[in-house]
Image (cartoon, rainbow, N blue to C red; front, side, top):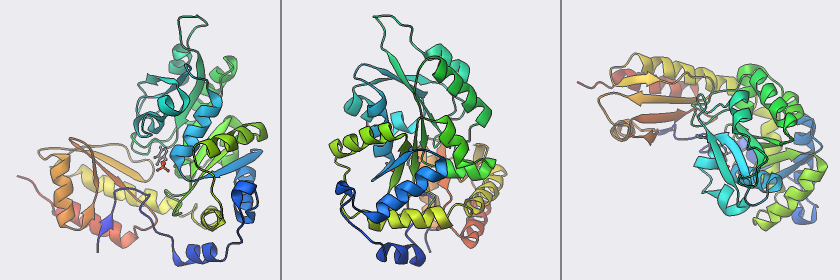
Length: 340
Ligand SMILES: *Cc1c(COP(=O)(O)O)cnc(C)c1O
């Protein structure tokens, strides 16, 4: 049995999700005629208290569409230096929107209001025009860290004061909501645009949602087409999204519990330097006396798959396809490995 901790994107649809997909009523979504896509979009918009939503193939696309809608070429986007939009979207901010970035050194992927305020460019012809502030919750490279909601309110106040739109890369927002006991509504009220992944911890095979007001989503729909993301009978995928929103949110706390258990087990090992605080479903730890690459190879010999994200950093991600037994097995292996 292989236990795959590389990412929460590796989940496969459960029989119940597959059944919902097979039964979906579909139509041509580029014509706006797929009833299941329309249902998912309305359901998500209502959940977050936004006017509209747009179903897209990936979280990279929802982020990149949002950035293109909010900026003009030559503008500057403010985000954390570890942000997915900068680190892992193929240079899309520059390639798709012709925008540059102002990278801030945050705390485990989280920026604060003072940093944002100081990063906004003055109204000066020499300078790029700041036109967007982006945050990521939970933060991927921050080890699944969650924002303190009060800080987000403060950042929003800075955005409002400077007339800047506020976007959230919420690939794993539901993990944050469950961990911090927050509501989608709180986030819908605070952000101009939200990107939510269905294909991560929620267990869908494909899909992300972009949320915003009607005017923004109308613009986003044009950009989705421009990016080649207009899908036809996408209702089969949207049905998985509806199923996930109805069934797979509450169980995220199990992933968080398993992540904490694994993090605690790692802390006591002689081959572990430090474990980043475990807040949700991600465990990132620094190795000692062994490279991350070699540790990953060793884990693989025990049928455990993990990711080396830096020379001495390993990432483990908990998800729907990792049972309590698998998490327990992982802890046994962690305790078994010894380096002298
Ligand atoms: C996974 C992820 C995305 C989107 O990834 P896709 O693979 O394009 O769906 C965006 N932001 C963060 C923080 C992510 O972890």
